[in-house]
Length: 147
Image (tube, rainbow, N blue to C red; front, side, top):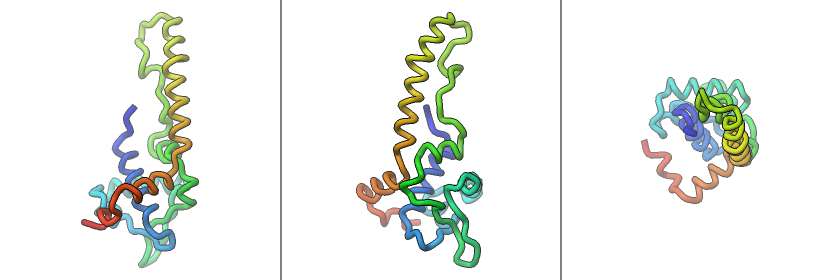
């Protein structure tokens, strides 16, 4: 499984946003410049985040975006679902068209279903707060401010 560019950039932008003081809205242009993401592409991503309640927009001259809820309430699963829909493997991704039914069922149960259960476990339990904390503990936050 590979996350699409939209999801990788969306997670990047959310970690950036989570690292900022929650009382100050952050302009998308600032996030885009800091992370070398196209502003237009980021606007598209944040439209999905707004619709799904991950971020909220703040209007005005000091406007921008804040997280709509605490970072520990935003899971990676919710981010991926907001941008890609389901992240589960589909049986047609791994099964040959002409497979024998018993073999197909075996692959479905022992491989596809198992992988999907593990994905659920990992992505539903990993939060934006954990990602932001890892980033803060392992990398110099100042790198984010170099444009």
